[in-house]
Amino acid sequence: MDVPLSPTNALKFFSVLGKLKTLKRTGWVNNEIPLPESVADHMYRMSMLVFAVRDVHVNRDRLMKVCMVHDLAESVVGDITPYDGVSKEQKRILEERALESIVTELGNNVMADEIRGLWLEYEEGTSLEADLARQLDKFEMIVQANEYEVANPDKRLDRFFESTKDCFSHPEVVSWNDQLRLERDQRWKTVA
Image 1 (spheres, rainbow, N blue to C red):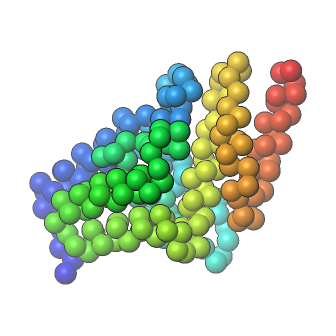
Image 2: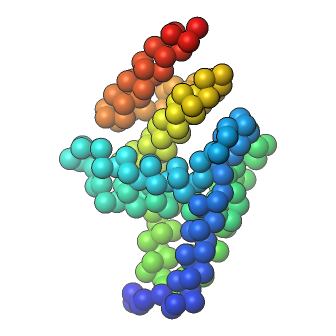
């Protein structure tokens, strides 16, 4: 049965969400980016990208929800990157435990099941929306990398672009990616 969250549990959940606002993205911190974005910043733009997806086969409401929960566990375990020496399997275990601790505290099984289900859908890539959310996750990262390069002309963030080179398959994201890389390449040619 779906019941409202108790005020105490609601405030605890809001506090968990608040941690994402101050948790800086590790990749940017490691690259010494001044004023790096937070995980919440990343999740917000990633969710807003959903408005630009016009594919009629995509459930955009569901896609937006997947985007909004995909990094929720980072409020507990932090932003673990592929360069942190944590295996994909161990990262999954850590994040799944963290997510479970978050949703257990809600005291609302319907809400907990929805968040858990959306997160698992993303992790396992079991739907069109989850697959597209994964692509938006990576695309948003390179949009941000490009913006950091523009703001810091002495800094090239090639690793982010190389790691996402073959990650995009949805036609709309492919077109955005192609345009972004074209503009970036043209910018670096004028700098050189």
